[in-house]
Each structure stands twice: as structure tokens, then as C-alpha cells.
Amino acid sequence: MPTISDFTGKVVLITGSSSGIGATTAIEFSRSSAQVVTTGRKAENVTQVANKCHKVSPKGLKALEVVADVTKEDDCRRLVDTTIKSFGKLDILVNNAGKGSHNSLYDSHLMDSYDEVMATNLRSVVYLTHLCAPHLEKTRGNIVNISSVVALGRSREQYDEFLDERAKSLPLGRVGDPIDIANAVLFLASDESSFVTGANLLSDGGSLNA
Image (tube, rainbow, N blue to C red; front, top):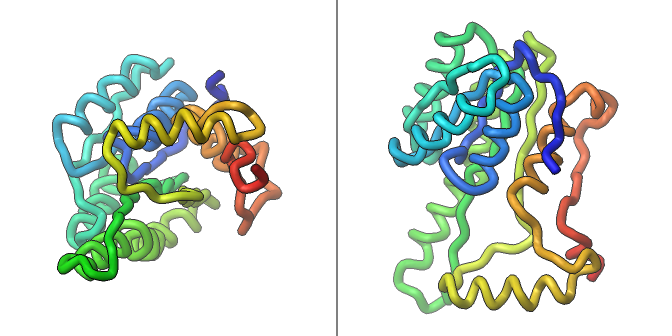
């Protein structure tokens, strides 16, 4: 079940929010009355998520759409500048954008893949945090960084097979859905977690204990 909290008046920027966990997180923040900034590399996907945010917003708020690639510094600056110009503040940054790669040491494109993964999963987090920190300090805001306990480079069929087998091994008997992570993000960004800081919250169905 979705977590319903009150984020009225809060401005939330979620990277990688044009699909998957990021999209679900954006929708749940909108459902909780937040003003959401949706962003991703594909304009069509960003718009689709923004429309879903609008539909569930109790206040009929329209999500701000910013097409951006977080591996590009100019795009990151434009993303933050557009957010501040539009709303005058930022309360919550969710660093969700990420990607995986599966390469052998003999792959001629190994380092290209490595650089792309690091630019997306690590460098963008550091740079966006750097850009957003002054604004978040003013609002006494929150930063939530999303990572993964496993990165996969498999086909859709192999991935589905992996999930079926993985579900059997997990203590909870199922693999996670985007809403499971979105619920955790909303909790960390809410007043209910005001005494939580610098902590790692695992939402993995008991994966690391299986």
C-alpha cells in the first residue's frame, strides 16, 4: 500500500523519474500533495509521468517537466536552476537515476561502460548534491540517495527468470516493487524520520539476510 503523508508546500526533485522507481516515487509524492519536478532523458516519458502526477495530486498540481541527462554538468545546473526559478526553493532531493553494466575484462568497451556507470551513479549524485545543498540548507531539507544491492546486465527473459528464482529465496517470498522503494523514500523525507540522518535504510525483502 502507498504511504500517504502530507508534503503540502514541499518541492521535490527526483532524478531518473521518467520510469521505474523514480516515476513511482514522483507519483506518490504528488499523491501526498508535494510539488514534484520530474526529469529524465526522454521527453515523452517525462511528460507521461508528469501527467500521472497531475491526476493523483489532491491539489491538482502540475509537475515541472525538465528533460535532462544527469551525466552532463550543464543539464544538472539547468535542472536545479529551473526548479529554483519556478518555485523559489527546494525541500527534497531524491538522487535516483542509475544504471548498470555487465562487461568482462576483455570487452573493448569496458572503460566506456565503466565511465558511463560512474558518471550516472556516483558523479551525478555528488554534483547535484553540491548544487542543491545551499537551497536545501535554507529549507532544512532532505536528501535521499537510492542505490541497489545488485546490478544486472541480463536479457528480459533472463531477468524474469532471475526474479522468479530470487523470490523463492527471499524471506518475504517476493521481489520488490517500485512502490516498496517509494514508500521508503517518502518515509525518509517525512517529519516521521526527523531523527534519522546519515543512515542506510535497507528495503530489500531480506535479501542480504537470505
